Length: 244
Image 1: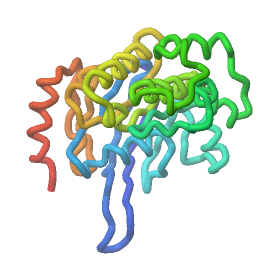
Image 2: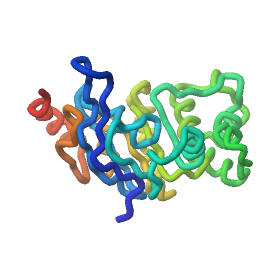
Image 3: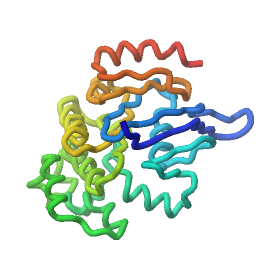
Image 4: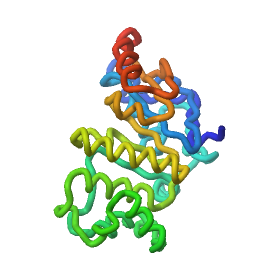
């Protein structure tokens, strides 16, 4: 299977000398194109650092990150910003919507920032897929939390990115709304052929993925295919053995 993102011997160290903290330690992994990968681990295991390095939001101290064959380390900050706008989508726990803009304007904001025109047909399809076809003119304050997260997902999809990255995208949602959002991410993979990489602490959320990567002490220590919530929860209880 083709790989959307490849990390080779990626390390990330914050600080220097005795105060240095290694968030990632020589991580090597390929994230499959058209797949749904969940990343799990205890607090401080390096999950968010992994996601940020993979998405080009942070620069590794050592190692290589390639997005669709593009080596991120060779790009200037300007080119890296352009790449993130055009080829990467982000869904965070905080919805990060602009209160004064409508749903449609929030969704198309990345396109406007990239000085690209929105395709009205595609915008309409994305809004329909996330269940907001009749809400294009509403503002965030008129929406529920779950609807706001759906706007954030639509915004991540509208540029047709190579990869959608999610950092605890259901962490601020109630159980039923979280299930709807996870089903939507699953549909993006199954129906649109999208690639999704999601950091989560929730075994139920991880069960929507094709593969779960487990991090501990800055390293990938295990992987699970076709995960179930029970199997993920059981595996998480044994990750403490890897923590120094």
